[in-house]
Image 1 (tube, helix red, strand yellow):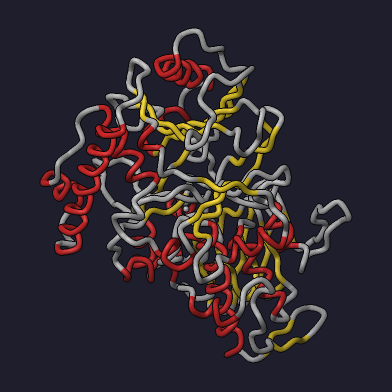
Image 2 (image 1 turned 120 degrees about the vertical axis):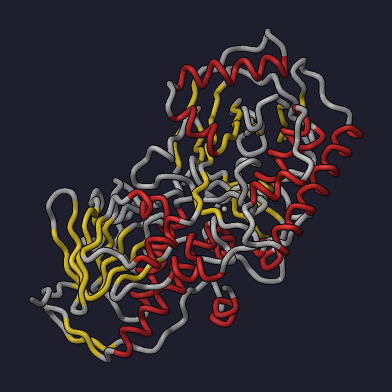
Length: 495
């Protein structure tokens, strides 16, 4: 039985890749598109919230890769939108490492520990390169594992926040090595609204009023055949189309929130299950006044604990929002999942104990705390994909490859820029180009009110030259090493 066609394309997910996919379709004459978003807002893992009198970014917070020969498309969008940003420099974080008694480790000790960690990482990477099929944990046993609190702290900041020195990362090679923190009351999500207003009806105050965007539509079932696709949502709605673009996170694909009829082929499900998920949590603390250093090269500081990643990496928000009196501490993976499972008051007590170890027992209590929960959010199930630095190209290809009329997009489908906002942006373009080619082979499609022909690809974005796009093949977060190893904790980062 044929599925009745109601529109040309359904896009599931209104993050940056989904919005970009819809924009490219509109620019190429495909206007009968439906965007189904599970949440009550667009943006996905780009999400702002008011906290302590300012706007903070719970997910993607940085624009990484600025200042190189090629323009980063997200940075270009930010410039054209006058998005307020602040340059971040992490190079001095290693020299602001506090011990349990509140003393800062001497710069020579920190530099020596850092160099030792870099050499160990290089050794491990080279062995991984020569033996890609050997389990990463076995390779790690031959490297010198961090043991002391300072070694554990440096190992954490090295593999979770830096490492451009150890192995070239495409983002920094292609776009430049500078990173800018988004500090705008309109939020990082403002860029998505600027993109959306070029093809969706919006009100004067910037709200999207277009019926082609449907919020609070949780997709639970996707039926597909050679004739089309039928999408069922949790509230019982059914939407039919020729094609579907899945712009949900890799975590959602792994969680089986969406069932497929017939089931996806084994090569596809195996590829999805073999992609690691990174959980990255920024905990925000508001204080009545500052008690931490705020001079030059003091924006980031580190706590050396005997447990790796235990409230290790700190940032003050004074550069972004002077007078805000806000600190941010970043936790990842196991620590992220642990604090998600406990109360915010328990997390606050743990964080305050660490701060008092660093700055003394006379510091004031925090007035408020904000703890994002990306792992337990069923519409995200994590922060971003995490591929090993020497990744299996077949794995990424299988994750990205369409299954019949189902096309897949998102940062996890970008081999060069996975985990970054610009990876999601560019994947939306790449996936839609492939879909348009498929549609073009069909020559013509009819919807209920008109017949239209897919025109040749026009310029994909006003902010990027088409030749630059053709050459471009993490929540963005500071520099990461794309390690795939259980004993080193969190590898790279974004969204």
